[in-house]
Image 1 (cartoon, helix red, strand yellow):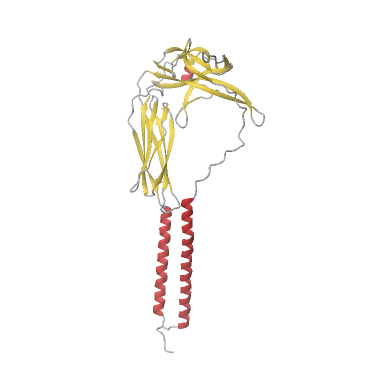
Image 2 (cartoon, helix red, strand yellow; image 1 turned 120 degrees about the horizontal axis):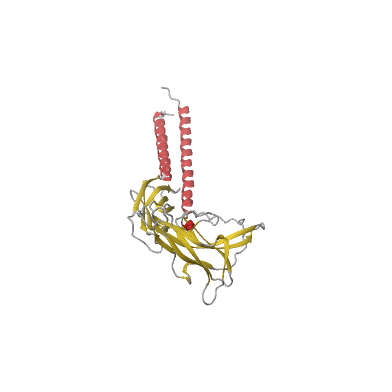
Length: 377
């Protein structure tokens, strides 16, 4: 093999240049990465969005106060709500009072309607234009949403009252269990929006109507559709958060409440974050509520275990004011992937850098070994 000293010297010089360029690149990468990590850990939370100022404007409603309550022929009797236990085909007679706490008489509407579950688990009523098909349709004798009654003003003796008798007729073939509706008093207020168009605002107050129909009572709650996701951070040694969502459904025929809800996350090492979810005061038969919780300070341990536990209580047709027997707690769980991507990328970059440096050193050693020992001048 013929060795050319000049050419070999040129190749060694180019290799040295590559080494210097690689070292410069690593130094630049470190100079950029370290401040970036520090900036990532120090970034403040995003500011909340500013509400839009283009919302429709209504004329301010009058400052009035009114209500509705169970009553006798003489006036409101202090009952928290209307509650009945009946057999199919039964008939009940009762009174309701529209109350006026304002200094002037009010023109109000008084009618019955059905209850519905709100998205977060709560008691709601059908809109005024909707036709009831449940408890609201069992009640007759009230003026209705299209008829106005005049309730006298408040006096030194108490609020003004307009007492109305009504009849509740339970259908012959209704299913056993709890059925819920409401008696509503409404104030219609006319206003104008920013364009000068007429707007009708309905201010409503309701009193709940609980009817428990005799038969086999079967309280039951299920927890389903649990989903969990991990949100990491750009900091390779930082913690992230786990978002857990699930659905609580009343699959029985009695009213229930969820007195306690908890969510926990566990892994191979580290702490086990826990979070509490707000109670559900009233969950109607057949209704569902979607719940969620965010647990912070969670280490990315590849695979995590997310668990949800709820503690239901059977209200047994008495409404949310009185609790019944506590049902067995329900626990479901799911797995969630928590990959430390930032750490893996950093480790990969370090491995690539180490391998590259070793290869460059090996090539330099080979070329030095191939150089001539030198000659006397």
